Image 1 (cartoon, chains in turn orange, cyan):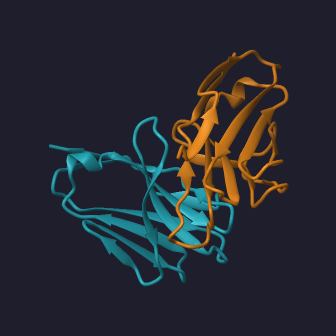
Image 2 (cartoon, rainbow over the protein chains, first blue to last red):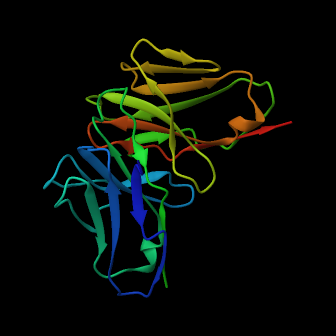
Length: 115
Length: 107
């Protein structure tokens, strides 16, 4: 039982390049989230999904796109990477975000550097 | 104004001290609340959920004040192993995190 798996774990990009981060969960969770974490900023929500085929914007969606074509996968895309997108990206999922009994399960993070 | 705001910290306390963190939120319709702990460069992990009646888990006590729109976390008898960043989470399906409060417990 892998939980939440993020790939790749590390990536270096040049400005203007594109890439996709993959988040995969095997827990049949409905809700999935992409966050970025910068020093002193906590986790900021980029986009999230409340089920297969749905996506919604979070706090900092600009410059990112997402897709949830399959329930188990949530993809985060950078169409034209910028140095400001250098960050650690975390994916998380949960069965039900409202119930206090259901926790967010996080991936181990993806460290992205844009030169 | 950010939707979730936390004490900026850092908090540096001796072992055995009691320390409290607060977190305020702006959306009165928020439905669930949590405290997460994050160790350096690792993914956050749930410390405890926060219930309306307040709840306790060993040395940790969490409280929710809906009228004033804040949640709190109290840590009693601090241990060296409590050193971490503590993040509050306020939720209306969109799980918003505070910026985190860094705690260092010293011998």
